[in-house]
Length: 293
Image (spheres, rainbow, N blue to C red):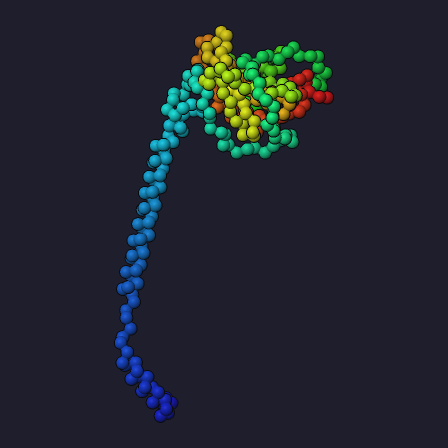
């Protein structure tokens, strides 16, 4: 072992005297354990509080929204599934479903700045069809098949299957288990026409206007139908140079069916699929003589 020099011995002796005067180092382990325990307690308390807040929020939300979630489209909270045939035309909630991508290069409609006009109370059938070329007749037939499929997909399931009616370009028939309802869809070219509006003396329960979301407004009508219980639910609005009418009439007497509501028809005309169908009919005049060649 190497012998230390006198200088090294002096340094070692000085260090020993200095260290001997210092107090012993504290034990940090107990304090660290206590701090860890406190943090675990705080973390668990926050987790329990967050879970309690979430459960409370869900419970309160269900208590408030439950009646709306249980009610069908176009009905009031807590109302029975079958809406009364003369329910008030209250403004429905705008459709919040996501917009589908445009097809066929359809261009969005623009609001018609023309003044208002008196509404048509009951949709009228189409005039006798003019003689069509084979090409135009096939175009009209294809369009009506597509229109029937669109209406069947967008109307409430209770309406049933929708098929075109022979001899009436604007007429369709909805069949739900043998219960039949007339359906009317027309796109009549009327350049310079005026948007329909309710007469000043109209009953708000039978005539009202609703925004379609593109700046235009639709007129909702509920005229009675001769020989049938209930009323027809009809929407009329301007699209570019045409007047569009969509209507669903009640079933024959004795049939127990849920009436279609104004809110459900508004959901149809606001949908992208229906707007593309109307845009095609308006652009090519399909319902006015079978369309351009």
